[in-house]
Amino acid sequence: MRLKNYLLPLLVLMLLFSVKMSAQKEIELNNQLNKFGQTIFYINQYYLDTVNNEKLIEKAIISALGQLDPHSSYISASDVKSMNEPLEGNFEGVGIEFSLVRDTLTVVNPISGGPCERVGVRAGDKIVAVNGEKIASVGITNEKVFKYLRGEKGTKVVLSIVRKGFGGEITFEVVRDKIPITSMDAAYEVEPGILYIKLSRFSANSNIEIENAIAGLKIKEIKGVILDLRGNSGGYLGTAMEIANMFLESGQTIVYTEGRKMPKMEEHSNGKGFFRKGPLAVLIDEGSASASEIVAGAIQDWDRGYIFGRRSFGKGLVQQMLPLPDGSQLRLTIARYHTPSGRVIQSPYQPGDADKYYKAIYERYSKGEYFSRDSIHFPDSLKYKTMIKGRTVYGGGGIMPDFFIPADTTKYTNYYGSLLRRGILLDYMNDLSDSQRLQWQKTYTSFEKFDKEFVADSKMTDGLIKFAEGRGVPFKQNEFEISKNEISLFMKALAARRVFGPNAYFMVINKGDDPVFQKALKIITGKEIPEAGLQL
Image (cartoon, rainbow, N blue to C red; front, side, top):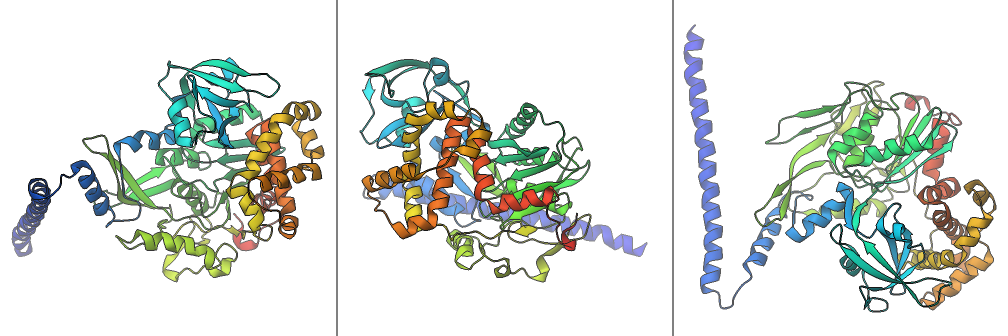
């Protein structure tokens, strides 16, 4: 009884102390805000020149956020809309995929069902004028293309086009409309019952895209899935939940978040996914981040499937978009992601030192991490156990794959790199496709026939060499011989995409020379048996 008599006054004192401390912090914060406001007032009143207050405040905000974690940031009002477009899944415009070939806007593909396709614009068409204004050979840029072709739904734009085989210009009147942005690069049946899905981002419609693709493929029985998240830097957290839910049983934790002001919140699967049992492979690399790591971590922690590739980026911080009065936004980190076993995905960082953080990420290459698993060292404190089999996994900086597949740079030369970085190989294939696409369609009546018979022969590669020389890249015989097979494969994949669509590009690349894909396919089809420690 005596203890209870002392306990209540003690609790009251602790509460009063806590309230006092909170009030004191609020007073200190107000004092600092007043100090900043007074500084801006003095600048405006007494500084020798006039100042741009909007720019001044904006830079101050950016500087303040720079003292926090590497992923908190400021987004100006003008950037907010364009930033959201790839994730919201649509924008308003004319509906083309384009390339800038020798300062000319060239249609790579009209988007299926979009305004340009509806009026007859074709792949290979060159847009030389918009609303009568010449745009060819006048320093056209991607930003200018967006300015000319995007606009409100229902507005009209007149395109003047040059097309091979037609004399003069052809005029099309295009009514802008909503254009879907797909997040799924490919979905196809690798072999009977084995489904391959390539996802480039986690957008609002990703799960619907996957469901529609599966329905369209009409696979009798799905026996295995390869989910390719390489280069996928993330997107919506909710979409990551939906994708992970496709493969997990009811009630299994997908991820949980925790922060100073954010209580622990867990997300669980509902058990209604289309492939909750059966062989599953998830492909990741150093470009896989955030939502990709949530999905891969959940699959790995629940021993649901194997992870193939190289260690992921390590972005495990939760950002919340906070609006500011002028339409700009703060992207502020409010919590950390944890995988079901408790692993922290986020790579280590020092607040206010983003340069050091990103340098450490890039140094993975120079330290040999892309080429040898033995170069990656985790302290025992970062060891965790998977939820079902108790396998050892690691936290503290990305998801480490179950099957490490080193990067192969033996076929990558400076000459090949120049062809890729300067867009020469892509431009050459765009030009070649313009002239050969109809013939290819007549010759190769199916992808199977194309895959078996199409070869990037010496005539094609000689044309590429001359084209590159015309663009200022001198021919290097020895480097070309080293990279020849890679160059030929890429040319074949680009031709396949022009004739048979996006799936065909990945069908060529995956089958031709992708060790990560090939390893995953062997494991999930049972052609190769994993070592005992990796059995699921």
